[in-house]
Amino acid sequence: MSDLKLVPPAARKTTAARPKPREESRAHFARLARPGVRTLAVASGKGGVGKSTVVANLAVALGELGARVILFDGDLAQANLDLLLGVSSRWDLGHVLRGEKTLEQIVVEGPENVRLIPAASGDRDLADLDDFRREGLYRELSRLAEDADIVLVDTASGTSRLTSQFARAATELVIVTTPEPTSYSDAYGLVKVLAGQGLDVAPNVLVNRASIEEAEEVAHDLASLTRRFLSLNVMSLGAIPDDPAVGQAIRRREPVVLAQPKSPSALAFRTLARRLWARPIDPTSALDSESDGRLTA
Image 1 (cartoon, rainbow, N blue to C red):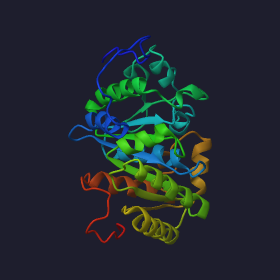
Image 2: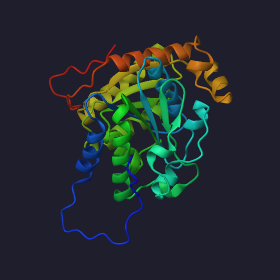
Image 3: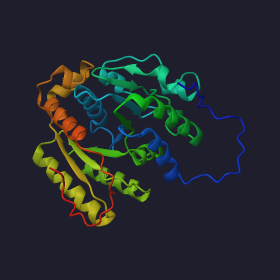
Image 4: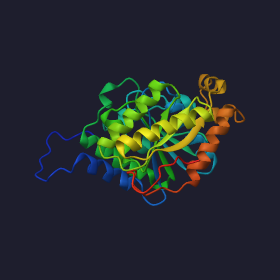
C-alpha cells in the first residue's frame, strides 16, 4: 500500500489544462471499477430517510452471499456506519486526509466479509474536499478495492458537491426515499441536479419504510417526472418495509439482518442484495432513447 499523503503541497505549479469536473470525477472512479468490481453510490435527497441503515444492512446481506464488500462512509463529516455495524474505529478518514495514516491502515473489519472505511464525526472541514485530496483519496480507494467485489459508498444526504461527485462517478446509483411527498420530491430534486451535471447511469430508487404498493406508486411518479422533464430513466428496486425490528437493531448497534434475521426488513434486505448481486452492470446510458422506461419488477 502506498504511503501517499493527501495533504496538498505548499506550491503546485502546472501549465497543463485541467480536465472538466465531470471527466475528472469519472476517470478516477473508473480506475476503481476494474473488471469484476462494482461501485455503487447510495444517496438521498434529504436526511432522515434511513439511507445509512439501508447501506449498512445491504453491505452485510451482500457479504452473506459471498461478496467481498468495501463499505466507504462518504458522509465525511457525519460518520455513523461504525455504530450501525457495531464496530469501533481508532482512526478515520480525517487521519488519512491529514496525511497521518493510509487508507489501508484505517480499515475496520466488519461482519460478513464487510470492510469499513470510517469517516470522521463532527469535522466540517472534511465535508468539501479540494481536488488534490479528492484525487488522492480516489487513488487510495482504487488500490484498496483490488481484492474486493463491490464498493458501496454511503454519500451525505442532499446535493453537496462531494455527494454529486460520488454519485456521478459510481457505476451504479441508488437513491433512497420514503413514501412522504416531501421525501420523494427531494429525491427528484437530487436526480435533477445530477442530471444537470452529466449523470450517465440510470438511477435506481429504493423506497424505505413503505409497503410494496406505496413503493410502486412512488417509483412510478418519479419515473414519470424524470422521463418527462429530464429524459432520464429511473429503475425501481422496490421497498423496505416499516419494521420495528430496525429501530431495535440500531439501539443494539447491530444490522437488522443479523440481529433479527427473520424479520420482514431483514428478508427485504436479503432480497435486495440478491437482486443487485445477480444483476450485471448495465453499460447503457440513463438517457431515454428507444426504451419504454418501464420499471423493473
